Image (cartoon, rainbow, N blue to C red; front, side):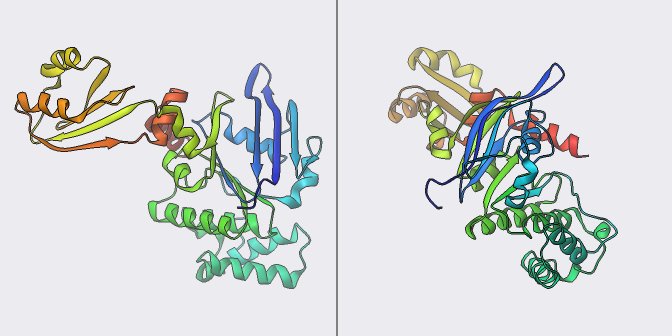
Length: 327
């Protein structure tokens, strides 16, 4: 990544719909060359934020700066800087892939010979060369998403905005989209992406912001966010056979004050504490109760645990909400 060049600066950005505040005084910046993830449940304000940043919605208050210039009053003037991939495709069903890309390029006044060259190159780069002459309406969901990403970058924007890029598509297509995002970023494209897939953000993003009910509750790099729960020490044990955790809980709490014991499934236990717990006393405790330990390991906190701790939102419920919305 290039160092310390701020390409987008957002200050106290707010959007209200009558008495409802969809986005509430958010502040963040985007550094040139990075992938910035915007995570939150359905209705948190992710899409509304992208809409304000790209000129599809007017902020109630706050400021938006691109490359140090205030574009708040007229985001349309910043359009040449921006590539936009909405959560639903905005391409034309009756045009084929090649025609769609050429049309999008024409909107940016790219000469015909150049836009046709770029369109063909993108179709090949995105694995859509064979589908280039097929109508967009016959494309699969994954193919539609890939062509929409291609359309978003045909004018070589400074920033690419991706709104839920892998929602509602099959696993193989989602993997291809993630690979494309990584490659685009490696080639120098700065990316702002919303997602409700925490593992996707952890895999792709250099920095992440969590937004809940219109407010950013925290932001930072993945290691920085991990520090939020690093005070917890976790040991995980696998046993031969099932475990009656209720039978041992009372003795365990008396012997290991400050440790929390939880059952993960029929034969796995997790011990969590704020202070490091020596392994041997735990092993002796289990051995005395004829609990045969197959494996003991230290568990490092995941970004999912950070998200749950800071937001109170369960990722499984977040995914269900988003998938229901997409149906």
